Image (cartoon, rainbow, N blue to C red; front, side, top):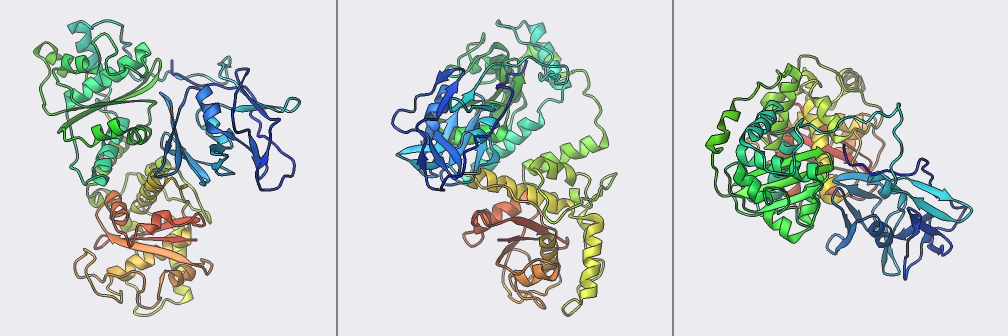
Length: 557
């Protein structure tokens, strides 16, 4: 049964009557966890902008978290076996296992203590709050509610075999391997963890990608499942279990384990973030070991993520090799196969242009409102059925002059027929992933006139209407997208399609995949401000018309 964290039945936001924005001490407010009063020692709760802020350490340590501090990013780091929260000081957002959430009042340092409104961070890890007005008490409960018929609990365990607290016989081990293969082997979450690991290595020393080793992947999944099924948590997870730990588990599959990392939960991004904040785990991710295996299992006692590295690649022992002829995996539909192929391509940052130029069996237009927010996974799923670049590209070259209003109206009408193309959607997903993961900033919605302004920029550059020569990496194409013929800068192009006058920031690149395009901006001191512009930035738009792989980004603030 999946490990869950529960709360009292009613969530109630602390409502404080009209109070000045400056911090006011609230010594009469108490916080309890399962009836036990939390001791805040030298700093009492305070009221800021009508919200009650409490010291981070007292509440989260009472809930089993280790509370740390990153002086470089000025962030509180809260770690528990299943969750990691990163709470930057002064920011209106925080992350839980790599997922961004909003705060209505930012965390801040008061009296030498990190203070924050605890409602949203607690809700992000499964708790809710109750408020006792008579005693001025915030009530936090960790008790488990009785399931109701309207809230069925799905079986979260992907593997049907539950591992016992003993060594498996050869027959049992062969059955486990056969089941692993019949379920598809390496899971999408494990592929994502490998992709994030390689991205982390590239961003921290331009290190080469690791190589997946199938038997090491099996061993890592096997040990992750052992930890989950038998309820092992740190410390000691590297040596826990009937095989004497992960080294013994690796040996059972014929492998020699080198460096290893473990994390709770089932979020690949959460694991990377957690390991990045631990010097030993960070070093393991950046080590020179050639082969890697990762395992993610969300089972009896919650999620466990395990990473193994090795300098050798061995086959399965002879006594287990007949398990390599498993029951065939279920036949994938064309749509499932297309999804798998795209995930694999994106994992390595490979050239996905050819893949995205093939229309899906069913094309589903993406409808946008004035400003539309989608999660990263929603953007990816929409890209699987969205129209291709070819289907949304202009049918005629741009006239050798500024477009008339009637021509602009035609472009807008055509856009509303199909919306953004699959490449543009994936660019938004990758941009938001980098913005939230590496800069702790909120994700941005898509704005239609920004997409149209970006497409116009892309078309003008493709057709040679840039005003600056130079080398952008794209042969025989002008360098600058900031000023092109007929329209001037970004602002004028955005306003052409209905955007209000304002200050605009834009950039362009020539790359063959969303990951490579985003990385090129991150690596450029002249362009990486597109990720870290102030919080006044409200929307994003990417435009691409194909051709010489020209991609353009525009944002507004």
